[in-house]
Length: 87
Length: 217
Image (tube, rainbow over all chains, first blue to last red; front, side, top):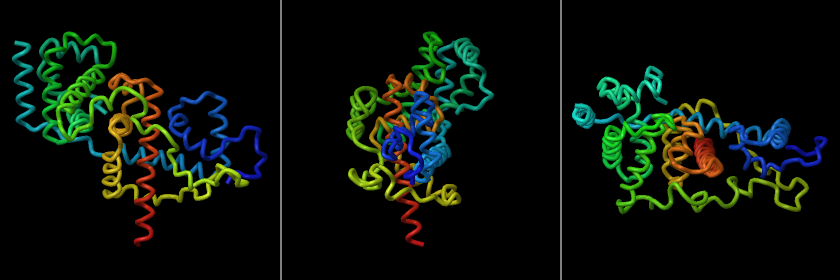
């Protein structure tokens, strides 16, 4: 993984990186930490894959169907209520 | 995500206030499916969720004059859904306690690592804290399969309530973090912790599912 690669002084462990993934993807990390995360990912296949799989997971989530539309009866009732309220 | 043909917020709120039924029908059609999904996080049946959405829309109709434009109209409407559903959920036997949503820490489950510590080299090991069993790549094709979506939906359904509502709003509905904080009235840090734990849990379910599939074939 990341061993023997001219480690900078405060190298992130993979255990730390996996807890920063969301903050990283959200752009919420301070610049120094973000840099360490980017450095780590560029050197560590496992973490690169982990981050990628979190992204793939969110892609699948985004493809979940959007919930059921209202039944026609419910929809009609709402429109009637709207009509009444603005009458 | 609402269809882009909806008029901008201020205009839309004006149309609703003016009693424009076509505009009302348009937002009802655009937002109701997502509202049902949000409500479903709090209540135990599809029927209850549909009733919550009815109730919430009626509250929107009654209250549109009080919409102050401090949040987007959609966020305002969704907050009404969340509050309505939460109240109703509190009355339902099988539902999540209202106290477990919207307040407190990460949901009673915010402690501990999100990835099994056994996946990493233990302390004292020369590569302590680094992957010992790194993730295996996922077959791209598999992610498009309907069963994978079903697995992911089941994984979301199995999450603690607060994680479930955050990941549903963020990753399923595509809300941004500000909107979610505003709908649920939680802090940005809290929102991120809940999202982080939820995503890690769903990824892990997906990993187990895809690994099983490999062994089976």
